[in-house]
Image 1 (cartoon, one colour):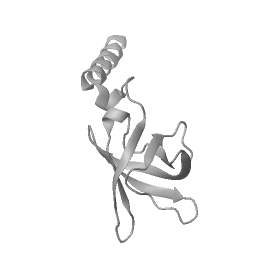
Image 2 (cartoon, helix red, strand yellow; image 1 turned 180 degrees about the vertical axis):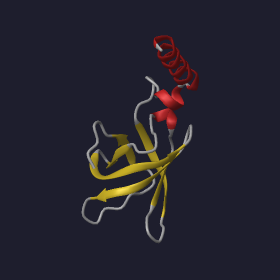
Image 3 (cartoon, helix red, strand yellow; image 1 turned 30 degrees about the vertical axis):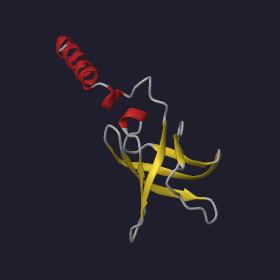
Length: 112
């Protein structure tokens, strides 16, 4: 029993290491991405980001949106690939709108 558990832990650890930065994140990632496009939809707008796994973005990651150094909204990553991510808008201050060129930063310990 002890051997089987140890072997399972070892195999799970090896699989995570082999998966590389996609699963584990990367120490080199800066946790920031630029907004490339905002796709307006009927029920929700999609925010397309210029970074993905390479910046530490994963589905479920909550980010703060900035313009000229001022935070004005929150988004949650819905899907990500190596160099691209798509997010949904959680909140915006007042009548603010997210525009291409805005910056998003990963939020530590997000509370939605």
